[in-house]
Picture 1: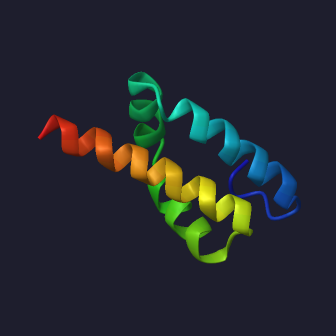
Picture 2: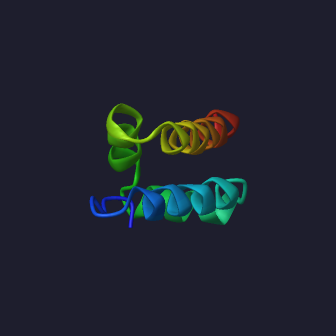
Picture 3: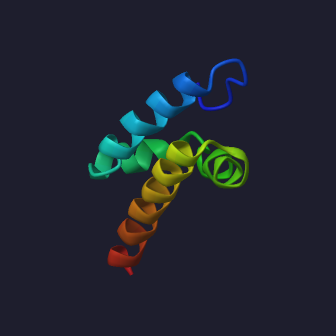
Length: 70
């Protein structure tokens, strides 16, 4: 859904859901496991403003989880 070039609205909705889910530790692990990070980084460069904001929030949440483990 994050790579669906036909509908920016669907990408924004998927990012919104992932943003909410990224507050859960198990969901963070799943997000990383399915190799979503490169897609999120790409969306930071090419996405719509709302999508960029959500992608940044998700990446920040993932980074903070990793930092807390160190």
